[in-house]
Length: 310
Ligand code: NAP
Image: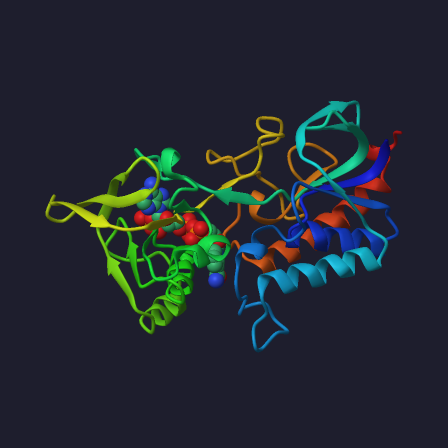
């Protein structure tokens, strides 16, 4: 299979890039591992995307973007990209099922995934009381005692969301102030969430089958505290999904792909956008904006001598 433009990832960055590329007359395929939408699918309500004064659910916004992409004739291929190699100016994408796709230009829009805490009990009890997504698993904790770990926007949103199911909800953060926006910190005050600041998670305990407790260290007093919980939602940040391209394009020390203002990476013909790149603001609106720029840059690349191949 030989293509002109492959977009890896069907989140807001990838789908916007697709819409712009198709409107520029470029045949476009998005490769998506699961379902188009990316991390939008994990967001109950998006309140800061212009045009929706009453807010819009992440699932609905994702579906609207998908419909728009399909309306212009875009293709979506389901599968996981394992590797990208180069043959002259050609890029060869190798998929988990063995398929190989040759293309002239690539837009990497593979997003980011949740980071782990790295404490004892975390791996053992993931799926047995430990979750990385409140929207996905919150309803399993109806009437139960839960804790959210983290102090960023995601952690605060998840804690507020969980109060609709859980009998009680703790929000546990390692510092004495949250990283989350002032707006969300003000919103949090309206919800029955108990915040425990300056607490480090030492370990997660279970009875062999499910989570039963969190062991914390109070960073101010050094005191060790055990709180009994049925569920733990870990929300301590993101890491870029770059396994298939690691070391082949310039990245920052955390692995995020470095692009210029045209969304060009260090390799000609490979562009990147959305949560996978190094930037200052990780939002749906910035992902869409970068997707549009990446597509426009890919269009220029495809009509230039640099892409004279295939
Ligand atoms: P984040 O902003 O990077 O916050 C991660 C939080 O986890 C920080 O409070 C951090 O603590 C804490 N943390 C990290 N490692 C930890 C560890 N080992 N143990 C305990 N705590 C740890 O991540 P995020 O909340 O997932 O958000 C990711 C990006 O998406 C951000 O740019 C965010 O603004 C954006 N986002 C926006 C919205 C919105 O606008 N509504 C919603 C969700 C996400 P420290 O503060 O001490 O470093």
